[in-house]
Image (cartoon, rainbow, N blue to C red; front, side, top):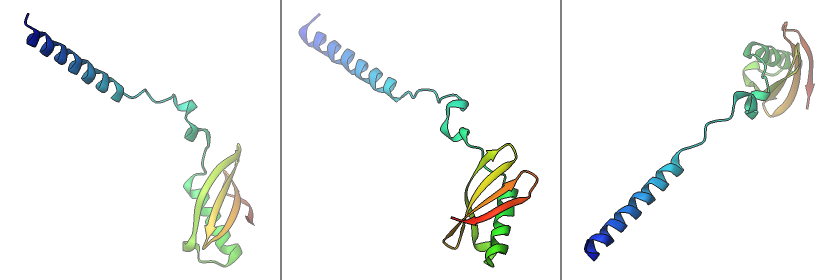
Length: 108
């Protein structure tokens, strides 16, 4: 084998090795199991309960219900959700149970 041929073979082998290394770095790890994902740890209130809270805030404040937006919610216990709402810049917290009974509406 001539020196030129040996150099070409060496360059090709190096290029292929570099390409394989680069492509293997692009393979991502599998996602974590559902029970270990942070977003699955919080159960949000169903939409109908969030809307009940928005209505309750509108009635309590005299604000237009179309201007009241739920911004977050979480499950407090087996039957209760807490819904955080924004009423035209005024923050309000609402507790509602799974039966649709609004327990409290408080400014935050």
